[in-house]
Length: 214
Length: 92
Image 1 (spheres, rainbow over the protein chains, first blue to last red):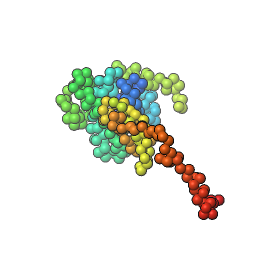
Image 2 (cartoon, rainbow over the protein chains, first blue to last red):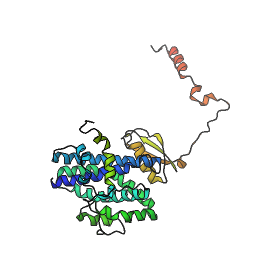
Image 3 (cartoon, rainbow over the protein chains, first blue to last red):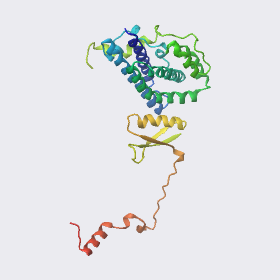
Image 4 (tube, rainbow over the protein chains, first blue to last red):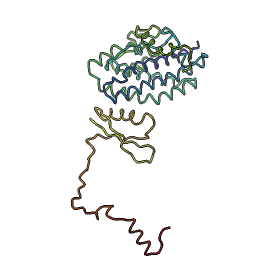
């Protein structure tokens, strides 16, 4: 697999799995308005995953759907941060805020890429991410100082570091007050136990009729 | 808090009432309104206004039926017909 396809898959898997996790709030978010907003963000992330998979699929001679749903859990390249099942609003917002903050750093780097397709897609995604960041920031501002939120940020920080390659971690840490870039990052490559149940559910319908055209 | 949301469908069009959102402050209200009334590109702009900031006026009494104060007090159609008849230019 090319370096480019590998990087695209990592990013696509992050977006797909996070979108999936965030969508678990649909119907049970703290308010009706938040339910609509958070579900919409989850949908956007999955839309970004699709665009990234499509680029990778062309390089790999496959399709976005096959990449998204036909691999085994071990083949996914997502960071453990997005896999964790955190149906607790403090953790969800901590993850959302950390993810969006890291994603801003990642997108800024990708927009500078020599690869025009990657740079172009990053610029498109970034325009939608502006809203995600606004949403994450307003919630983080609201919860800041709350012990449950602060503890969740501290707990998830090593996982959040695992989203980014090492050279981007200092820039990320500078945006998250009170953190340092080197604190025991939970890297990609080893999955948490929570990915498999998610995968079972996510791919259930597709696996029920292998090879079907949906 | 309740915020009333007005949306503009295209540039230059009047803002019309779209509905309302419940939110703890104006920042949340804007973000929620953005999703509720804009995510399908159905609006080009929104006005998000705290309901408290809206001053409603409803006392339109007319106990003495002063129809001459109202538009319906004048039958324009009949008057126009009379005028045309006088001038001999009845509309065909």
